Image 1 (tube, rainbow, N blue to C red):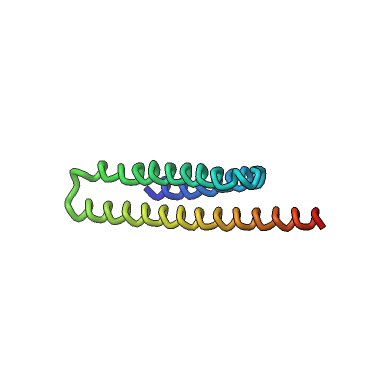
Image 2: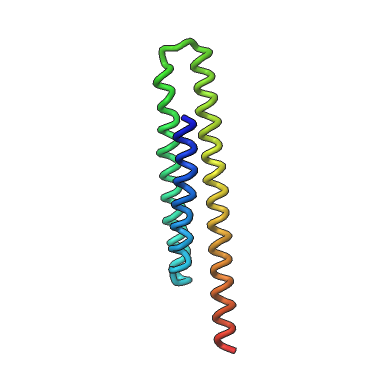
Length: 113
């Protein structure tokens, strides 16, 4: 479970890096859709990895109730941590779009002067 969660965070960071590059290359009018597609991909990955984490509960389904509760708690904590990482990543990408847009507007003004 922990390995899946750690690998998922690394994957989210890698995808976010690729999305940043795509945002830099995208014309201003396409940045919104590029961001939306990137966030959809990130959310899909988190959903898939959350299911993978939760699948570990099948391994303890015949164990004592206490063991099942511990495993369920661990799954819930790891999934929540993954979702917090997703939220943070989404916020960072949205701020990045604002920065790129602001920079492009500054460059456009400088060229027109």
